[in-house]
Image (cartoon, rainbow, N blue to C red; front, side, top):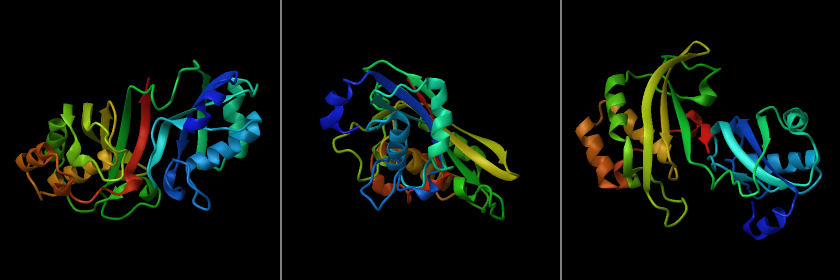
Length: 262
């Protein structure tokens, strides 16, 4: 939502929040981009205008990067449109591309902001560890065919739980002067089968995330799993608050914004 238009937008009758899922493969992230670059926000705003009959400007819980997916992205916008809540997901499906879906719609208080009202978020990161790639999973997982030490990776993730300075996992390019202190409530890994693919899924539930924080945590955790560093080294890198010590950022396609809590 454009800051200069927010006061005008809030004069509208309704504040609508949507829960949105999307496959981020074909988009330059969520946040609006100048054409011809296309982001999820560009498409949502354009198509929702057809449903509500007025100009739509969205606020979003998270600005997912290019290639990152979402199952539980939350957006909100102000509108004078009268369409009933229960009809919004169906109407949206008629105008949106198949890789963007409105899962739920609700009317919220005028002061609700999908971004600023969020209390915590869950991101999932999936790793496909089969010897061969899987065409049904490749768009949604990082394929690592070498063996991984699963128990060591789980132990590494436990080190992150609590309130810490996560500067070691913050990439350049995020919001300037952002406080690097975050609280991680859960950091765990479990095994699951997806279309027959043998996947490891890393779940991180935190009060908030710095730019590339989730993918950089995955990168360092995978380094433990590959026996490139041990747990003592993992903790030293974490405590150093120095991004240069962390391996290259994990690929975007494995990451999914799973749920946002308010």
